[in-house]
Length: 100
Ligand SMILES: [Zn+2]
Image (cartoon, rainbow, N blue to C red):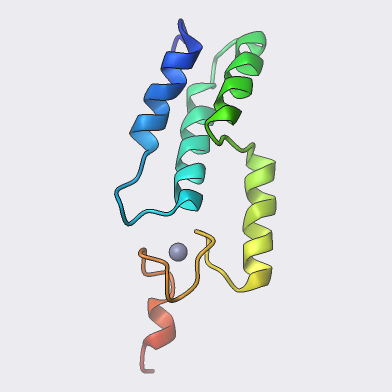
């Protein structure tokens, strides 16, 4: 991505990352942040800094922050989406209900 108009470019990544109604904000944040990181590959550092600054207003988290978030959730017994067996729409807990 060229990032000619950073605000517009971030907004378009934001829209692409937006989930359907069943999707949690936590899942969105991971999708959005991963997409931003991907678009920053081969982008000049000074542009990267500005992109991240603006992306943060849209909810962007750095990979390190996402890892910390995932670790917190694991401690709480949540899945990678920050949800529990009653709320995760992605089937993370399906194996919990399997009969062996
Ligand atoms: Zn999940």
